[in-house]
Image 1 (cartoon, rainbow over the protein chains, first blue to last red):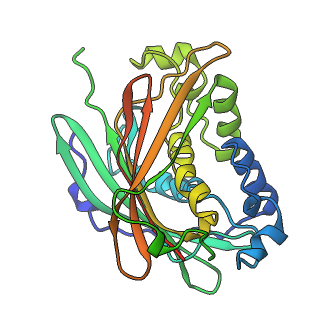
Image 2: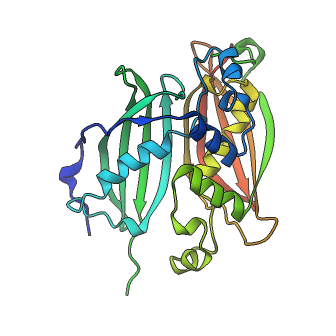
Image 3: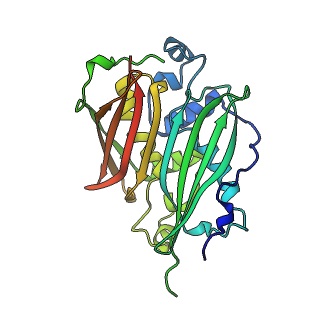
Length: 150
Length: 142
């Protein structure tokens, strides 16, 4: 079923703030087995000019994808989430995510396309800190594969 | 932001040290917990096969997190990464054994930009297949 094109350009209100904790950053760095001390040792982070631990570059996806999930789960949109795969992912950073950040995400549906029976949707998530400063923008392309013939 | 590589030290074609990242089922379970992505295609073989996959596959975001290591280990400060994008072209298939899969990542400087920035193009392979396409990072050097 084709997706509702009227959703293109639609923006959603900012999410409730997500508070970035040191232990969550450490847990994530351990899970991707990245031993860079800038993720675990505040002194090492400060030595590089950061005010606290910073998060690995892809850490913020957990936050933006949750926000995007609320958007694409909108039943009016008509996306079959059980057939969705991740197509592309991109981030553009104003600064790294840091421990202590309280981040909000504002999601916008950028494009909706249908290609060979696949539904393709691009969602942009703008991430801001508590002061309203831009931290990072995440672009997520999701592809809902065409259902097989029964 | 304190990159340990100077802009003047690199040229187009400069190769970054390549790295290999092993991935087992245990790796994926740990990543699921840390990232909050509990999609069963990343840990449940029966489910993965029912939806047409050859076996359990790695989270694309896990592979993306590993691939940028080639850049962040090179520059030292991950805060130097200004942009990073990938296309998920093929899944990393992770069999249920002690060996799992291997993701091999290489990178080279593809362009010198203004403001001490360079673009690095990454190549990520697993089992002879290119698992990331259009994998590019822009990084600010010293």
